[in-house]
Amino acid sequence: MIPVVDEDICIGCGNCMEICSAVFQLQDEKSHVIDPDACEFVGCCEAAAENCPVEAITLEGE
Image 1 (cartoon, rainbow, N blue to C red):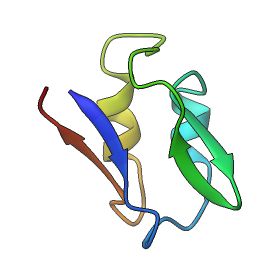
Image 2 (cartoon, rainbow, N blue to C red; image 1 turned 90 degrees about the vertical axis):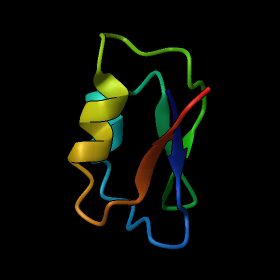
Image 3 (cartoon, helix red, strand yellow; image 1 turned 90 degrees about the horizontal axis):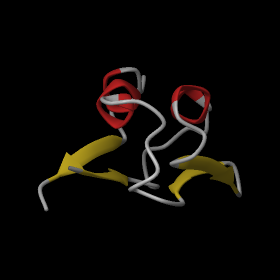
């Protein structure tokens, strides 16, 4: 699964970056996926999506 951030609704809280900084980084006060294949542990992208307070992260099939 590939994480996608909807920058229109992202509030830049940084939760996703705290969960998986190898995949997510804040740029211009919004989260961006910098490397969708760099998950540090199994399920980190799913955890980031679940912990996004505005549901800006979705997972798309490969």
